[in-house]
Image (cartoon, rainbow, N blue to C red; front, side, top):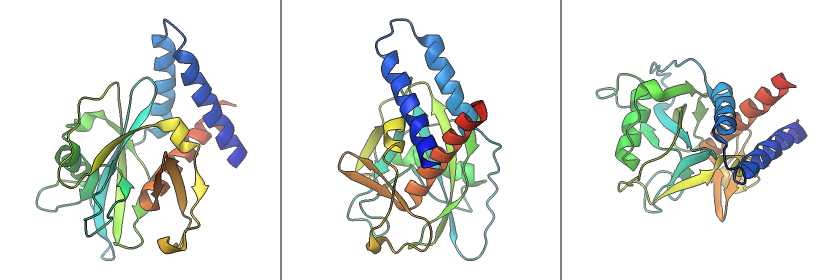
Length: 219
């Protein structure tokens, strides 16, 4: 199964590398973006349902460009929760401000990186993930954009990362760091010297699985 995922990601990386040497490529690029949309698209079920055990939160998975790039953020090391961690734009559901969890993801994205995504451009959502230490149940939503404007981080964000998607997914590994206090399957992804782990890594693992399933259905 792991070999299937790696073969598929190799195929996608080679495809996009070849695009760089092709003068006229809009149809080819469009085809690859459509594959991404099909794999990650789903019905939106954004109602905020509290279970009494964890707090609710939502994030926005933002992919853009002809060579798919994903937006992630690094938190300042001075924060009380998730200090220094790499995550997706998003935050806590506010009952008085947010009609549902999608509203949370879009609001937090505006506040954190100055990016305004209309809800009509959200194509799907992934399965919820739970943070092991801070007690949040996070709903990830997905949007795919053709390009990306200049982004501006607020005080909650130390750095905005623009990470090539398919090379990132190829760095999938099991998380064996005992300090992460794993009580379920844990993974890591690597971008240069930065390690993505915890809830964000489990979201990326879902994306890897969905892309692999899309390839399997084609074969």
